[in-house]
Length: 177
Image 1 (cartoon, rainbow, N blue to C red):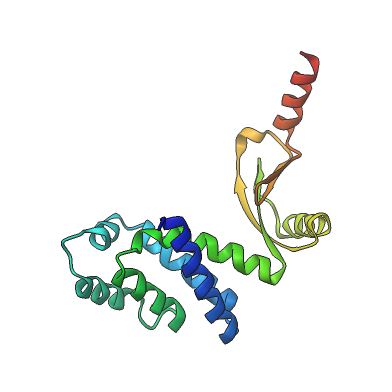
Image 2 (cartoon, rainbow, N blue to C red):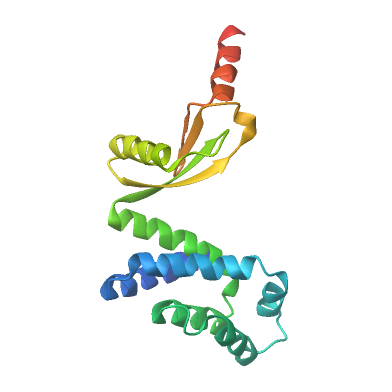
């Protein structure tokens, strides 16, 4: 079975447990934190992915790092991933969990690219506008991208809304050719 299918199954199971306990958002944040901590530490990644290191040693190390800092569902998921040798699917599991949680909660994540740092008010205005467009509650994450020159680009799922000056100039250039 492919890792993609397995990650979706684990994400669905974790979501159902989190939903039963009423901690969907908490589990999402904890998963992101755990995945980020592992991704940002090359030595930890090597240790967890090393085939000659036993499951007990891996779980002992994870206990030192995460036990008591994450909820029981997240902790148990980590233990199952290590036990089954599937720790490499953690980032795919996080991505799938976020999609499932967003769908269930009527939310969507938007990444807003702008040439400058946006204020809280601007972010709220963008979230409000795109909530009307999508019919979902929008959670905004911003990325400063100086090459846009001005304006913004908003990515929600697979869709890109391009209101950047660079995008407008590109469209104008194509129209003139």
